[in-house]
Length: 191
Image 1 (spheres, one colour):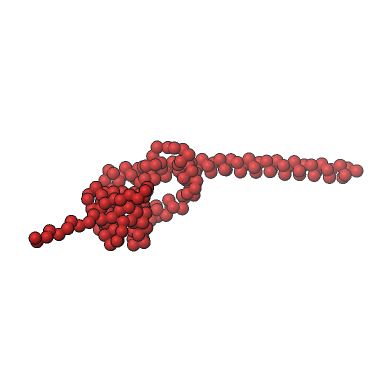
Image 2: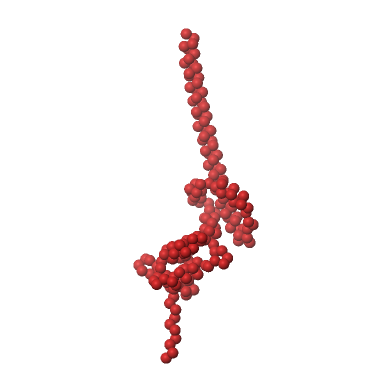
C-alpha cells in the first residue's frame, strides 16, 4: 500500500515543480521584456542625441567621415522603425523633431555641381504649355531625377522662391495653385 500512497505524492511533487518552473519562466520572460524595453528606449535616446550632435558638428564646421564598419554596426543595431517613431512622438522630447529635420535635410540636400530645385523646376515649367501644380512638378522631377530625393514641400518652396525672384508666376483655380514661367517681355518693335 505504501506504493499507492507514494504515486500521488510523487505526481503532486512533479506538478508543484512544473508549476514553480512555469512561474519562474514567466517571471524571467517579464524581466527580459522590461530590460529589452529599457534598452530600446536608451537606444532611441542615443540615436536622437547622435542626430543633434551630428547637426551641431555640421554647423560647427564639418564632420569626420565614418568608417563603413561604424555605419554597418549602427544599421544592424537599429530599433524597428515603428518602435522608433512611436518612442519619439510619445516622449515629445526636444531634439527629436530637430533630428528628423536634419535627416530630411541631408536626404534632400543638393550635392556640389547638381542643379538646384529652383533651376530644375524652372526648366521643367519652361517646357510645358500650361501651368502645373507643385505636386505635378514634384512627380515630373522624381521621374527625371530618380537619384535625388524629391519632396513636394521642397519643390513648392523652390517654386515660391522662383515667384519671389520674378522667374515664375502663380495662378489659383479654386483652392488649387498652379505655377508657370513668367512670359518673356515682348520684343521692341521697329516702328
